[in-house]
Length: 261
Image 1 (cartoon, helix red, strand yellow):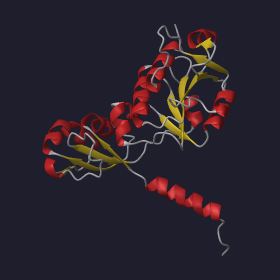
Image 2: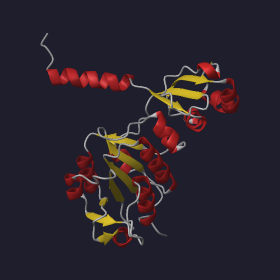
Image 3: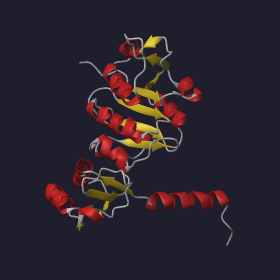
Image 4: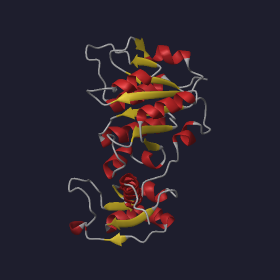
């Protein structure tokens, strides 16, 4: 039998590792929402008696057998600084399908997407997922590398939004932008030095599907990302300090490009 090429072996190993990977969610809110999510594959639940009493209805819905532990001997493999509130749930990552599945899905009004370019802080991404859910974004898109992975810290910050708001990791963000443009999306890149204000540009495209592209705090958008965007836009500010945290910028931008009746 012919020996498999190295790249084939590495690809197969990567696929097996991804399939085997699990996530530990923690905190009452994040664990409850995951337990109530029928699409979430649940593997192991560790709870204290106090947490069990608070999650009893969700545990019954999920039909999972919990492991009751002493609060002083909470043995879930979490970071010691994690505020777990006596509840930890091991799960598989959610499968949100393809970029086209999300971008072309039916929804209320013209689609809105958020694309994140090297935003690695899980707390920022968790907050962005909450804003995306509030303002009706179809999905939050990020590259598979150099982006915040789906973790317990991200889920806790998202306060349940991770179970409902698609968070899709793609191989290459630039390729994703090109794919979206081919689907008819207008891509707006957020850049503080841009000349055009976001609401002025958005007024031209209210009835079109829009993708907002945000970069990491500090470096901002990468060069190729900037070049692929249809427009670079900025959030107008009145004070001398004109910079927002990326999660706040995401919320303001989604509000600015909302479809109006």
